[in-house]
Structure formats: C-alpha cells, structure tokens
Amino acid sequence: MGQQLTYRTTISQIGNSQGVRIPKYLLERELTFATESDERTQVELVPTGHGILIKPVKPKKTLTLEELFSDWSGPYEADELREWEQMPPVGRELL
Image 1 (cartoon, rainbow, N blue to C red):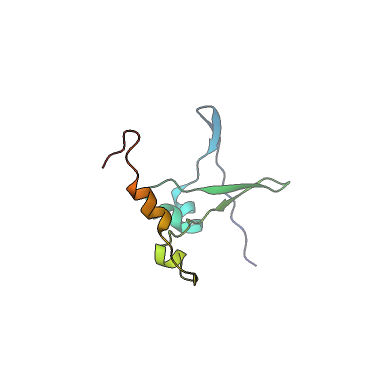
Image 2: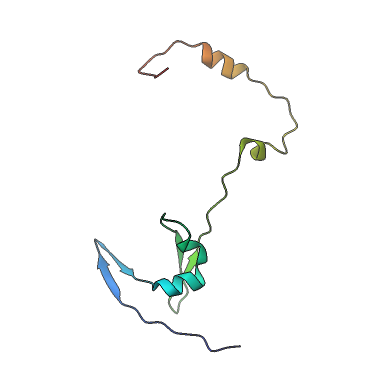
C-alpha cells in the first residue's frame, strides 16, 4: 500500500459557522463530480472518533414518469383527475 498524502488547511470563520477550504487539485482528484457543475456539491460529514470524514453525496438521478411507473401493472384510473379538472377556481389560480 502506498504512502497516504497529508494536506494541511485552516479552519476559518464563515458567517456563524466555521469551514475548511479544500484545495481545488485535491477536489479534482478525490471528488471529481464536485468540479463538474456550478451547483453546490453536498457532502456528508461523518464523525469517526479520530476526526471528521468528508464523503461525497452523489446526486440522485431524476426519474422520468416512464421510469417511475415501469413496474406498474395495474389499471390507470383518472377519475379523480377528471373531477378535479371540472371544479371551478376558488382562489387566484392562473389558467
């Protein structure tokens, strides 16, 4: 097993919290999906008794309706939907 690299950084005040800045080269090497988008990447913080482990939370795939109901074999009944569509507006609904 190869030698594990160690990186040092500083805990900084960020608003009412404290944070750790992770160097970009380390993110690119260890959390490749974190640098693929402009959105904030979620991570899990796991207390280990020896420190805090930072683990990536991989984004969940958004399923299509076809994928959501791919294993459904029952009948499709839209009676409730038809009743709802026939109801008059009761507030400030936009039509």
